[in-house]
Length: 399
Image 1: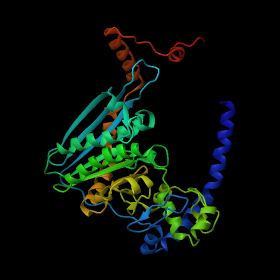
Image 2: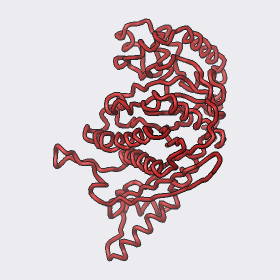
Image 3: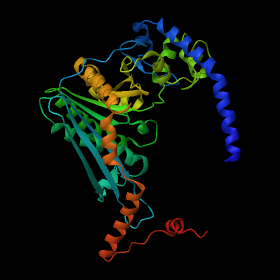
Image 4: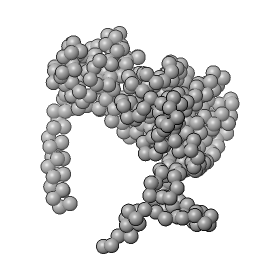
């Protein structure tokens, strides 16, 4: 660490030295983007599949700022978060544990709060594997990143169940932590039947349930991403400024950088850099449509993912919403206003998500207890609870 601290000092000195030039470049980029009219930006970002970077599709304007709506009189915020204990190949049996925590916070004339935690132990063949319906031998074990995707779907199912039990006369914001886009499904990471099972059989039906609820009462679904590292809005600016043919773009650009002018003015900036300059606390950015291949190719039209950025007071957050929220002024206003209200109550982060996380979290101690409980249960049934020698070695080091 003594050697590392010297390298860290050198690194932070270089960052400080580049900060002035970076601020000047950001000012120039914002000034250039301000001169592009919304129609031109919308046209140039409407089809970016051929470009070597992910650029959002402009819906309202390329850049801009929209104030928070007036506060409501009475409302509900429902949130769900999840945690899990993955399949452990060193244990004698295969299983995983999902734990869903949530809260229903009622504000206004009759304030109330309800917290819950719902664990589920998955042990059956149907829960442990996703099978290929076209091939009786094709299957994928649900563990690692795939378990994370399954958990996300189950979180939304739990949220839908929770909202269905909320007071029918009050507007409701349903909140989850993270993204509505199943990013790990992009590319060739998983076979098509996995995507069909996660999105077609899992995610879309529950989002359709929430859309159906919104037909009879104000219900908005939103996902909050804290301290986002996305570049979709920056790349929309780059795409709108770009005077070059796509063939030049494929040779000169990647998702972070370009060697061509004026596109290189956007190099290394994040979306939050733009909106840290443009947004006052509580204000939001324009609404954009993500051009993620997962949303574009696997989601039905009503549930394609849109997003906006909000100055949450302490940070710029990204709020993702389905199309049925983005295109409804009442629901968009509900999402904007209540996310801002939640961030104010939670010191810059939605308090409902924080409370849900506290109910959902599975600590390191919980994981140890779970292993012990599993071993004890096996032994009570007269079964072996032996683990691998590698696992024993890690838990009982020689030195």
